[in-house]
Image (tube, rainbow, N blue to C red; front, side, top):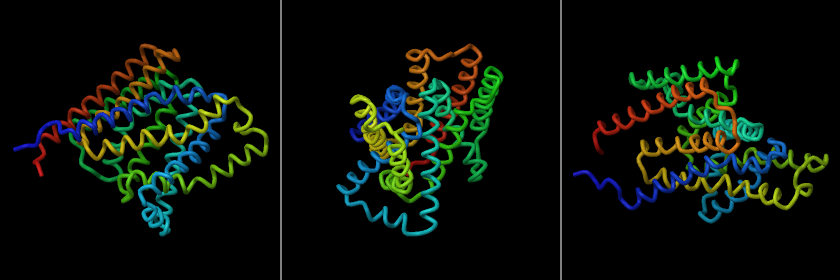
Length: 301
């Protein structure tokens, strides 16, 4: 007999994952408060203050052994450095996009991530794709093509976000490290560059700390908490709910971002752009439905 549909642990896991994606969806509201600060400096602060919090959490759990093992080999060092670079590039372009009035395009990038992952599975890992997955990718491609026609250019921000996050996910999928240890290693490897950049900014008189008001200081120093809390919620939820449920919940973040971009920041959302989104949403709906159907057909155990 199958287990109950909704155990207390699964309910808590689903709530944690939903809250994680909702908070990620609200992220533009946070970064917009710091629009007057260089995006590269904001990402450097995010690195430094995230590392402080992550090291404290690992210390409480006694998890430094995994960090030492990960950086103890040349191969592990190279893989984690590359994944850290991808993650940082993704964050940088996202923050820059939000603070230059491209929240809607940023949301498009994260709508495209699941389909980018499917494409990477096929062309990088040589996984077999079902017919519905091919159709989903075709729908998303048609949506992007319509946006190129409407914008007169490719949606570079969205494509870059989808590509870098997809490549990062691919590396993390093959990593033996847990989410907390993996993020700590990645942050640790780039921390010297972040600290060096912040010191240089301060030395040249362009750094934010000590030169902005109290409110901006609070927001800058909160970057570590803003980063770590959703990731910890994600890790908690991912261990307790089905992968298909987690996959469906991930669309919450870009949906909230899209609504913020259109309704709060009044970014343009012309009919042609809306039609492009419809094709992408159709692809996502087909992809999600196909995943649910395949998982229900899979034998238990």
